[in-house]
Each structure stands twice: as structure tokens, then as C-alpha cells.
Length: 125
Image (cartoon, rainbow, N blue to C red; front, side, top):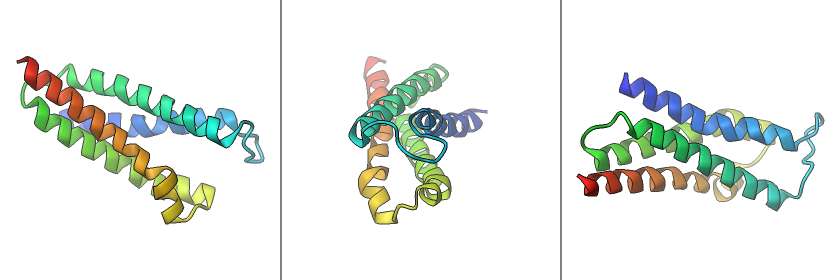
């Protein structure tokens, strides 16, 4: 059950910002706000939703917090990259290089947060 929750929450960590992004585009696919403002909003939405999901996920973890932080962070990072490769890149027409320099690298915030939460819980024991 924990592994299913891990994957489901990882999917939600990708889906929430993805859905939120649609509010900033016209039906024709044109961005309605400044690109830099859009990217800032997406980082904030992604970070807050991932933080909320991580807090919820760790409520059911009772041991090996640091290890779990590494595992959940890497799995969610992988899920986000994979879904972007399958869905976002074909939709946007970005090159792989542009994607990783503009978007993909930002997903490292997820393992950074999950490892920080795991470390904090481990040190609190």
C-alpha cells in the first residue's frame, strides 16, 4: 500500500502544476502572462503541492525517515521527468536539452524537500 501511495502522490505532484498551468494559456495555446511570471508561479505551485503531499506521505512513515526521504524523492523526481517526457515535451515541442535546462532541473526541489523532511524526522527521534 505504501508503494502505491508513493506512486500516486508522485503522479499528483506532477498533475497539480500541470493542470494549474492551463489557467494561463488560451485555447490556442498562447501564454496569457509574462513567461517569467508563469515560471515563477509554476515553481511555487509545484513546491507547495509537493510539500503538502510529502507531509501527508510522511504521516504514515514510522521508521527509516532519511532512507524514505531519499526513496520518495527519487521516485517522484523520476515520475515527474517521465511524465514530462511523455506528455509535456510533445505538447510544447521543446528539445530535450531546452527542457532539462528550463524545466527538468527544477524537479530536484522534490528530493531536496523529501530528504530534508526525512532528515528532520530522523533527527527528532
